[in-house]
Image (cartoon, rainbow, N blue to C red):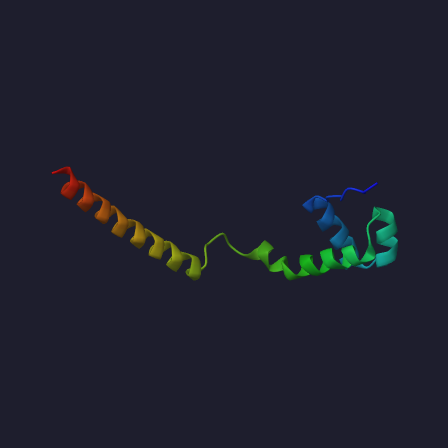
Amino acid sequence: MKKSRRKFSASFKAKVAIEAIKEQQTIHELASKYEVQATQINTWKREFLSNAEAAFTTGKPSSKDESKEKELYSKIGELQIQVDFLKKVLGK
């Protein structure tokens, strides 16, 4: 019989990753404690450390996002003008 995949919540992953970072227990001890593979704990630890700077970033969108937004609003304006023109031409 096929075993279904277990899904872990983000809070559980963070808790395990923080314990792995503390290094008070070995990865293998944590793996047996939480019943997950040691490689999985290492992966969560690596992801946690690589995304740690997100906790200190502000909610402002980046300049790349702002330029994309301006470009999209410009396109919306062009399309609105075309729609209005076609309504006038075809309405007569």
